[in-house]
Image 1 (cartoon, rainbow, N blue to C red):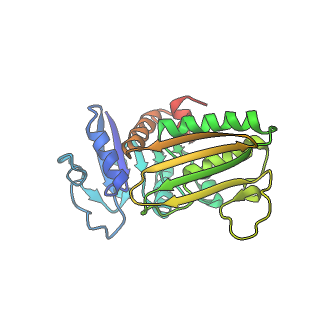
Image 2 (image 1 turned 30 degrees about the vertical axis):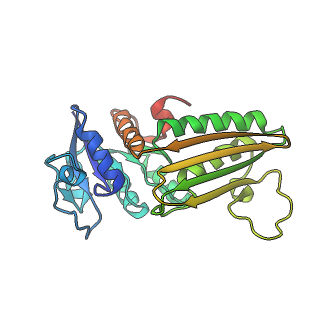
Image 3 (image 1 turned 120 degrees about the vertical axis):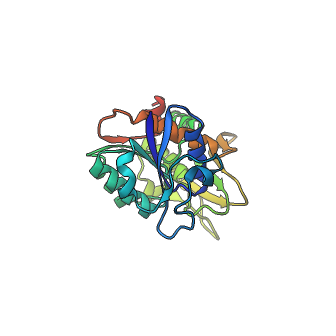
Length: 268
């Protein structure tokens, strides 16, 4: 029986993950955590998620419940996730991080914490998106000397707090790495007025926010006379929840270090 703790337990993703855990007989929700002051604290996490009592009341302190867990799944906020990762590192508990928007210093902090425990850090838990990362890498390699411009457009729901999405930034980084470019120098996230001709090395990354869109990502490779588009559309957060649980299973017995979903899915 794999005992899983969920941070961000009362959020949209947290509830979806809890339902995934409850649906699998060899998994147990052993802890549920939310930020201090959340009105859901004290409520059974299973009832909050709509799948009946699971015997894990929502807590505001991961430190008090982490000993009951084999692994933690965290879809909360940057600040709370960093705290969760630090606790997991000290307790040598694996953690799956689905939170996005970390800056370089925060990523370095997570890498340091991974010296003591196994961490899955991924911009996106979807099987399809992680295949998209691989396909975009292959396309960028094949087309890098063929005069193709590359632009990324992502669309998410109105409630998303970071932009561009972590997935879009990962796609841009994959492309920049393949082309031997410094993403910070070539990324373009807005155009207005007399911008001049497009730089051949530019990587456009643009964010749209509308309604309840779960997540759409399109990478366009455009040349004079033709255009190639690689697109992934998520219709439900369930795909991310399933991926997070797969990642939690993956961490069983893994050595300390940082892994991503391509490691988990063995599609590198």
